[in-house]
Length: 228
Image (cartoon, rainbow, N blue to C red; front, side, top):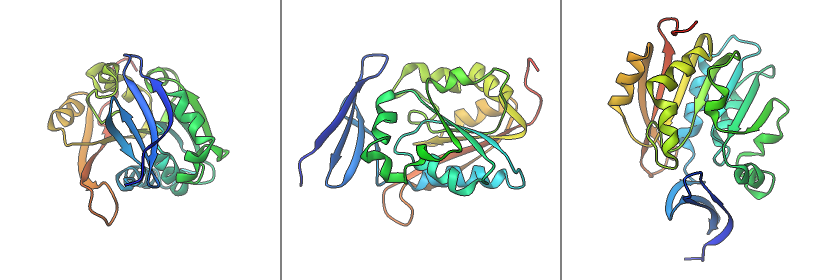
């Protein structure tokens, strides 16, 4: 086995160590020695984006928020499936990942940050929710899904209050799409209690290849959110 090459390091807000590395042609992002993502596992992220784009068919200029950059596969699949008039806001908490995409990591997904339809924002995606801006779709590939692994603060994003903020940030007929490493019946119940219609789907982590399965949640508000 070829040795692992460390490309960059960063600290999460809680002090945990994030390491971007490359081994035998595969890129890895690890938190305190535990792998968060691997560049060869991209099938589920692509399905998330394609399903969301399909739900927006007929909208000439959809506004889409993508929370979490990773290796860029969610963003690239969204760009490939959405119309030329689409506008996407990519929100990534870790500046070192945005910087990595300006280098060799950007080649993995065809350099999606260079697409003129994309506005990249270095911030917690929660800061873009609950304000006056409305999105036709919100795609969240944050942490390992609706529980905190990288950052305890991510729990707030998927809490009842966080889901209310998301609902207020969706345009009429808008869609929330959430990537998760595992199923979560409890999260589905929380979504319904927050006024969403929801369905979940288990998909291959790597399209057409062994490598486990991930869970995707697709939710649309079934009633006007509180505060509107």
